[in-house]
Length: 116
Image (tube, rainbow, N blue to C red; front, top):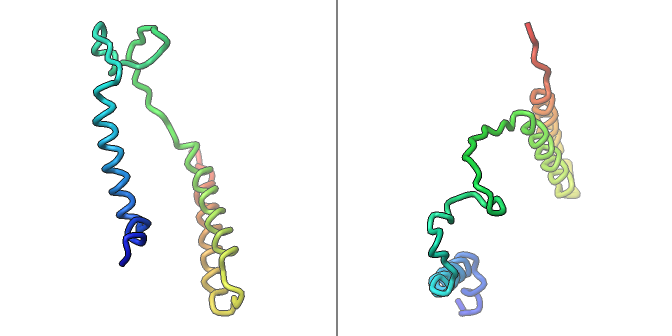
């Protein structure tokens, strides 16, 4: 293997960049501004100087999930159809099976809950 191939090999490139960025972070830490009057300020929420009481909010993504799932399934179906080979006789059955499964999963995710 040549040195040019090793440099563009993704794991090698990742570790080279990781080492460079860690060294850069270490050296720039020395010149970064640190407020001597408020050392605990780094852990507080930034609110334009206003003291904010801590509030714990429980985020509910239950209404978002069906739309994210729908978006994902539609994109996977589109990608599968767009990248299928020209000779579809070999993969047509698998494609149809996948599409049926995808549409059934969409109907399941958007089903209405019964309120008894």
